[in-house]
Image (cartoon, rainbow, N blue to C red):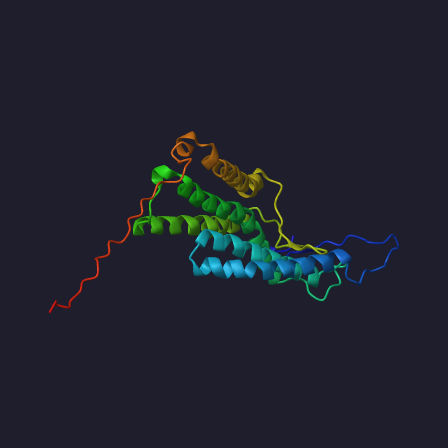
Amino acid sequence: MPPMSHLHLQLQFPSSNMPGMRTTGAYPQAVLLAILSAIAVLINLPPLFWHVKNRNIAAALLVGWLVINNFFNFLNATIWPNDNTTHNFYDGVGLCDIEVKIMVARSTALPATTFCILKSLADVMNTNKLSLAKSKAQRVRAMALDLGFGLGLPAITMILHYIIQPWRYAIVGISGCQPGFYEHPLSIIFMVVPPILLTVADVYLSGTCPLDPNTSRHIPSHPIPVHLYPIQKKPPTNNLQPS
């Protein structure tokens, strides 16, 4: 067996029953995927800049992961637009090594960043913990939570993937670079269980606010009365002395 550093797969699915016939043109699916992915990247850039500017770390990380995902979809559909991957001009060395790690990290990053966003919304809706302004310690804890879930957990997933990685990467037409996994229980524990647990937590948090009776009963059903006090103006004084 060749060493891991030189092992990758290029999977080719025959598109014709005629032996020896190669596909050289781009599939319509590849063209459509490349166009839609490019549009998705452009659409997500303004929200990404806005969240970064306003220091919404969890939302910025979520949009950033989506931008990277769609950018890779655009590259894959452009470089490998058909099933003839074995005779392509590029074998994916370098790009696919990075992309497969991003892909395994993305499976954890998307539900993890969603968890952080939903937790922030749940804290805002919880009137028992409502405050006009967060203290510095609260802001630091929130930032650490967002970075830990949005970057730390995906980084751990990348590292764990090395343990269950049978080859560097595989290349599939249109889809491009794909990661590999050993058929082992550790693959399920490392790659499948964490996203499922995070998704369950997301579902729980998404229903916490409207379903929590302790929170909903403290929300007033009528507007809070506001008393407006008019400005007391002094009557004009006549400085002229009577003659």
